[in-house]
Length: 489
Image 1 (cartoon, helix red, strand yellow):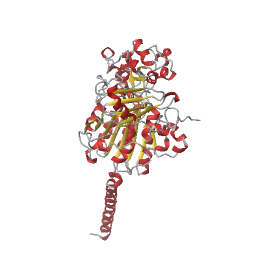
Image 2 (image 1 turned 180 degrees about the vertical axis):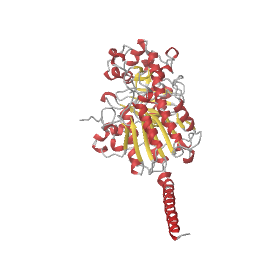
Image 3 (image 1 turned 90 degrees about the vertical axis):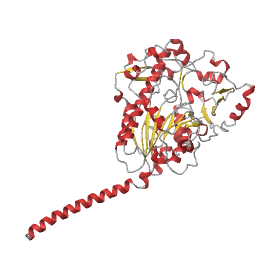
Image 4 (image 1 turned 90 degrees about the horizontal axis):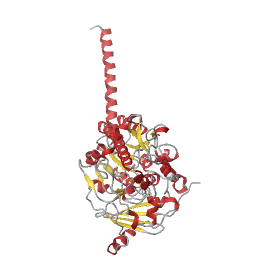
């Protein structure tokens, strides 16, 4: 072989060798990255659904609820059948979840105040921030705090806010409030919010779907760090403006009304009657109750579709066996049983869905089952740290319910404390044990219900001689101190 030809051929062989060497070196590097301790840490998919009450199939709050995607998640994970909010109002509830502190500790009882405006909480480390401090990437979209954008979305908590919108489009002005009730509500907030009806836009044109799509796209990408991915769906928060297909899923002539008693409030104190307000009576007496129930069921099915889109993306992603899924609603919602709204301490307004799925690779069980122990959304912060093996945060309240995630039948002696303080008139609390629901009003008066025999809370036993011991035992769990109402300047 001529010398020139030999040198040329070997030059090409040398170049091929260097290319292959580079490829194998890069591949080895990525394998090391993928197998590094950071990659082995569990990811978190944190799905919040606004105003989602127990009207989901797996909880049986309404027999006509159609939520197949949430139900499927409950089949795979642990469904907490007795999960309760820290407060039956959006901002106080979400503030408690994200800070790990009770409303009675922070003084955040309403929707108009922000915890970082308080000097003692200006530098507070929230749940997603804590994960960031321990090497996680934190992305959030939609309504996770009280708003999806601005101060009330807590931008400092996130590396990226991938969607700062929420909800669905409103119909043209002439097509709103066809129920004819707007002028009957004295509360301007309820007058503005209580409405329902179909819209011309498709599901994919809504902001909530874009939030779900943003989370789905995140799951399709390669991430070198473990992640905390927050996805906040606004519906079924009022108004219930939805694509018509969701109303069609719940035909009006087939709607079943929830239970109600006209004499329900005869044995409850004035504090409870104030919380009941007027909207429930107006809607029931107007003949529009079935329409309202249809709207709520439709909104729940819409939210379920958004949740399903994210869960399907996770299943198809490389993260499916290394991601803990948490789905929660920020509080309950009453659609006419006692009132029409949230902001009350009964079960209808405080019980909320909570599902935690831990993949088998991370120690979870394929069908972990349901847990009937009472748990609080306040417990989410310490629980997620526990499940991910992160150091405990000694500054937060709540208890890790990781033992119940691992064994839903484990002993759990703790009741849930729920706080609501309307109109700056002191702090009112509920205490929910496994069998009883106790309510204490700051201006005087109590309620006690045996939930085994009276799940609709119609028979107040607070003065019943046979239940005084139970009442007094639950009283002991009331907060010893209540922070004053924080009023923004």
